Image (cartoon, rainbow, N blue to C red):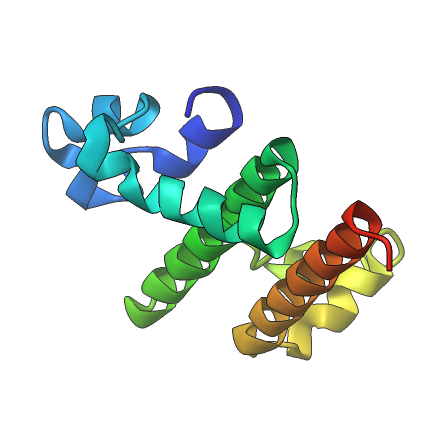
Length: 135
């Protein structure tokens, strides 16, 4: 998870990552072995059974996994009272340069964004599936 993922996992922002090996483990592929790969196999099988080819099934597993991890991370941070990654200090932004962002200041329900993300993902997967197996 180097590159773009690294800033999200800074030790100073997530004290639980202060374990000596935690940060290194999260930068590498921690899922190894038959038991660890069983859920990936089950997900590939489910998407393949639904009608996706292997490459598309793999993409579907990745997009759903990433979405689930993102929502889980945001919900976990919300429970802890931490500011979500997507929240901006709107007052500090000049109104003429950021009119849309400033209007978002009153939108505080993260469930709306999570539901939109999930609905969009499911709709996109359905559309991909329809293209994969024409009726």
